[in-house]
Image 1 (spheres, rainbow, N blue to C red):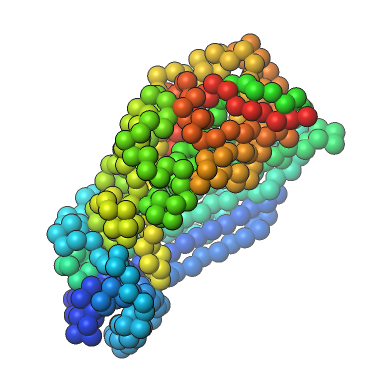
Image 2 (tube, rainbow, N blue to C red):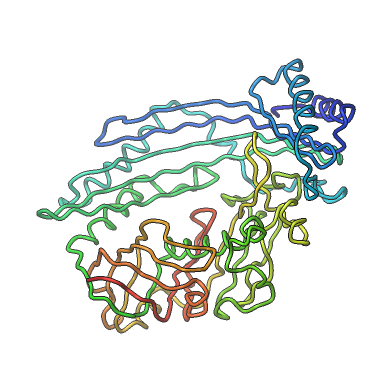
Amino acid sequence: MVLDRELVEALLDKARRLGAADADVIAVEGTTFSTRVRLGQIDRLEQARERRLGFRAIIDQRTAVSSTADLSPESLNQLVAETCTRAALMAPDPHAGLPPPGTGVTAIPDLDLWDGAYGDPPAEEKVELARVAEAAALAYDPRISNSEGAEFDQGQSDIVYADTNGVFGNYRSSSFSLSVVAIAGRGDAMQRDYWYSAKRKFRLLDPPDVIGKVAAQRAVARLGARKMPTQDAPVVFDPQMAARLVSAVATAASGYSLYKNASYLGGALGQVIASPLVTIIDDGTIPMGLGSKPFDGEGLPTRRTVLVEKGTLTSYLLDTYSAKKLGLSPTGNAARGVGDPPSVSPTNCYLMAGTSSPREIIGSVRSGLYVTQLIGFGVNTVTGDYSQGAAGLWIENGELAFPVEEITIAGNLKHIFRDIEMVGSDLEFRSRISAPTVKVASMTIAGT
């Protein structure tokens, strides 16, 4: 543990004596390893260890936040004193404060977030993972002409949180990821695509050669891409791209977007915002989930929150501050960097699986687009307007027919979600935001 309970309580007691009725501490100790291999050679090799503490003092609804990497008692005592002095100088905010007493985490559930079996093997073994993945991509097909590299990343951390309401919690977590970007070439045509695997446990990562082959398959499949005329047609999002629709909803449902009047979902609680096929859940308690944690950045227990139930908006994502601004209750979605005040972030946010297989969804389309890549950030969560550069495969008579590129798909999130007419059964938790295959009845596809 990065800090013991006795030291943390001494810091909070000092803050009380300096006038801070509310104060909290968050401390993180972690290590990271990252390597990238390109064409068999090591392009990047980084390893870091970090120990940091963040302290927040709230005096008469005036807030200040500080952080330090020096965890000696003398340094921490000075940090507390200086933070309290600064807090007293800040402008008051009636919504500042900790979560209500009695709402903080009291027991730490075992979410199985720590890989104790992996240990700390030599860097050469980790580099070899990236080498094997890239080599598999390069060897898959003679049309794989190059690589942007393969990356292996590992992180592990110990986290401690405590506040003046008597909350104290700590947990350990780990994460591993391996990815490859392959480039395919035929004549002057070049296409790139990627694949990856990310898990809490090393043993659950996809094999390196499989990741490399999938990246290569995706790049080769895009060779010979055509441009398409502008038209309205059904659009099928593959799971990776459908997850970006879910991410847009999570952003629009964030308390900060709402109280700043920067969300098309403002005032929409209880209203139908999507097809009855759409249920979106945020759940920070999924065992081994990449976004799971036993408590959030304010010490509140994470939970399962239904954002959208069969098309109806049933909740927002809130930390304590945004909940107070909106007259609601926090949902355990406070996220926080060590030196930053809390903000709102989803944990594991996903669109629930439907009953249709991806083959059935594609087979239902006479002529339309299967999206495998989205380019840029063309989503306006204030208005819901959606316009994204895209690439993928054209569907003809229920079959994937040929690759397409240089197109834009456009609509409005209000209409896109209401026009979802099929949801796939292929939900897989590959990242913090997940979705199965989704079919939208019609969108504008802008091409030539």
